[in-house]
Image (cartoon, rainbow, N blue to C red; front, side):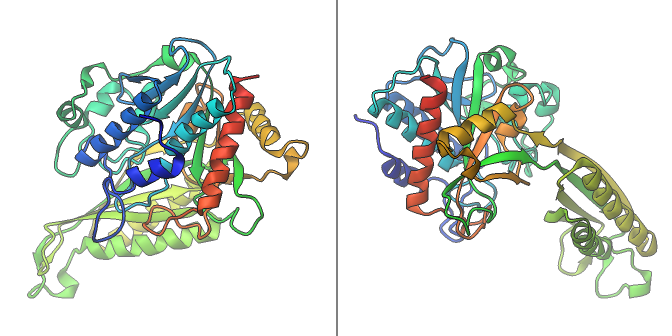
Length: 408
């Protein structure tokens, strides 16, 4: 079987994990949809005669050249999604990576360094609540014992889910020998914003990732009857939660930061019952660490102040955090030079508030990112999109980068 082209690969992957009602994707880590995505990745590797392997943390690799060689050039992204996410976030980078390898070989280029396509597992954290699990484990940024304690909404542990999917969780953990053999990692991604939308550029280069994290707010109140309990007698955690959501928006706006309560759980979750517990998850990001710390502290203070008036106890737990990532300057400039020719300064270089595997790996090896223009800027939604011509431009750009890094 001859390798599929970009658009054929895209069509094959498009229906996997798609919800017919929302039109979005539910490709959660170690689920059936994830297994189908992983099977697709393996088939693409084998169709091309690439050396396929799965590492100790469940990340998938497809190698052109010696997988045990040094100074490898690696590209790829992830295939999992947020709940009802878009088609491009993650998969665009993986599909484009295979297409770029094809383009490299079609040019008759002969890599002098190993080249690999990678699919990092559980990047979005939609099922177990922690983003970039596969790359965090490999980079030593997530301890195996902490990973084993991760559970989904049904109480299924990460280890159990991996076992059910046929992967042994006993060996998860840091993979320094593998990472030491990588000389550069370049991740192509759909832009999650509109910085490129009003320009003539289909592709840009990343400069940095804002510091960001996730905090769980537990609002402990008192369950009671919604039809018989006087308003003055209530200890309603929903009121405290609602006020905190509004406070988060205000504090972020004043600081030029971002703050979002996008997930909530309620107990006992009855229409005619005052809740005993409301649990909300805050996602917050800012251009610098000081601003982020201040915004989260102000949101917490607002929650505790309102909780004191409502008779509600507030607990805050930081579940994950990623400091600011400054991508490798030399690699970033190299990419701009490869894409811009004699005018590297004409290539857009832009920061982002979104986290990525490239950001996790940047502490261990030279990493960089490129973005494909998103006409609406919408992401993590079924409305996420990229024009066909811009996707083609992304593949061409990635091919240029692979040739420049691996063949010269």
